[in-house]
Length: 338
Ligand code: NAD
Ligand code: UDP
Image (cartoon, rainbow, N blue to C red):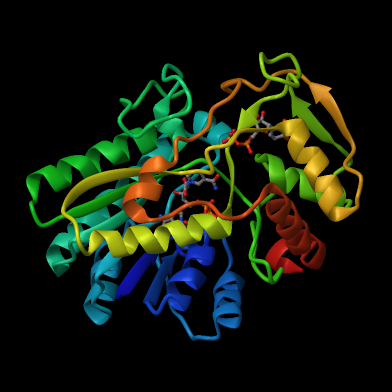
C-alpha cells in the first residue's frame, strides 16, 4: 500500500514511517516542520535504506494536500499532524483548535476528492477523561477532558466517526496512544522536543546527559503504591508496529474502530527513574515538587482488543524503553541539531 503520513516527520510518525517501509509499504510524508526537522526524514531514509517522498506543506492547505494526493495516489492516510503540548494548549486554545481540527477536516475533504477511503488517526488516552475507571476499555464513553489539547482529540474523534457514519465507504481507525517513550534501537531516531521538555522521559534523558540539572517529580502524595503517578508507558517502536497493523486493518474493514495502544501495565514515575538509571548507568538527580494541574493519579490500558482484532501486542520491556531513550539522547545530546 502507499500511505500518506500527515505529520510524518514527528516523533511517532518518523518511527512509523520506518516500520511501514520495512513491512513493504510506500510512504509519502507531509509536514510543515513546525515541531520537527527535515533531518528526521533523512534519518528515516538512513535507517530504512530507502528514499522517501517528503513535502514541506501545511496539512491545513487544501490545494497543497490535494495536489500531493493527485501526484501520489494513496490507499490510506495516517494523521499525526497536530499540536500536542497540554500546557501550551491552555494558553493558546484558539491555535490548538484551529490547527488540529483544520488538519483533520482538510484531510477528510481531500480524501473525498481523491477517492481515498482509509484513515488512521493519532488519538490519545486523554479522551477517556477524568470519570472512567481504569484500565480504560474502548467501549467506555469519551470523558470530560481537562485541557484544550484533549478536547481537540475528543472533537476530532467525533468528526471522524460522523464522517464514517455518513460515508459507507470510509474506514476509520482511532488509535488511542498511552505514553509513548523510547527511540529507534539504532540511536539515529528519537524524540526531539523543542525547548524545555513537557514529558517525563525526554526530561529524564536530558538530566542524564547534563542538559538539565534535575528532574522535578510532580507529586509524591498520590494514592499509588509509591505515591507518584502511574502511567502505561509504551515503546515507540511497538506503537509504530501497531500503526502497520492498523493501516492494513483499514483495507479490510469499513466504519470506525477504536484501539488502545498500551502495554496494559502501569509504571510509576519513580520506577521510570530507577529503570533509567539501571539501564544507562547514569544517576538521575530528582526532587519532589507539587502536583501538576490536571494530572490524574494513575491510568493504564486494557490492550485486549488490539491483541484480539489487530493481532498486536506490545513486545518491548521497560528496560528496552530506557536503554533506547538513553542511546538516542547520548548519541544526539541536542536532538537532530547535534
Ligand atoms: P510531534 O510533534 O513530534 O509530531 C507531529 C508532527 O506534525 C510534527 O512533525 C509537526 O511538525 C507536524 N505538524 C503539526 N501541525 C502541522 C500542520 N498544520 N501541517 C503539517 N504538519 C504539521 O508529535 P508526536 O509525539 O509524534 O505525536 C503525533 C500525534 O500523536 C499527535 O497528533 C499527538 O497529539 C498524538 N499523540 C502523541 C502522544 C505523545 O505522547 N507523543 C500521545 C498521544 C497522542
Ligand atoms: N512528570 C514529572 N515530572 C516531569 C514531567 C512529568 O513528574 O518533569 C510526571 C507527570 O506528573 C506524570 C508522568 O510523569 O505523572 C507522565 O507525564 P507526561 O507529561 O510524560 O505524560 P502525560 O501522562 O501527562 O501525558
